[in-house]
Length: 60
View 1: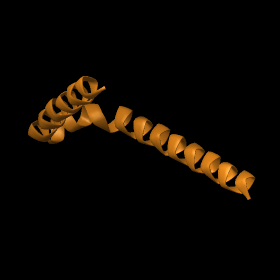
View 2 (view 1 turned 90 degrees about the horizontal axis):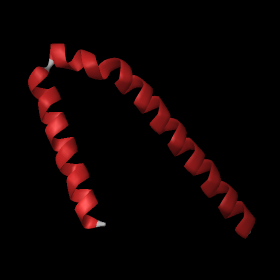
View 3 (view 1 turned 120 degrees about the horizontal axis):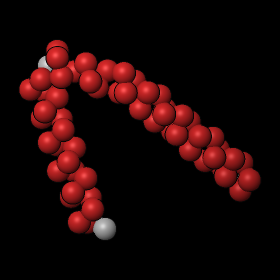
C-alpha cells in the first residue's frame, strides 16, 4: 500500500513540474508582448513579483 502512495506522489510531482515548464515557456513568449498590450498590468505584475520574492526570502 505504501508503495502505491509513493508512486502516486511521484506522478503528481512530475505533472506539477511539467506544468511549470509549460507555463515558463508560455511566459517567455507572451511576457515581453504584455508590455505593449497592457503596460500598467505588466509593471504591476513585476512589482508584486519582486515584493513576493522579497517577502518569501525574509520569511526563511
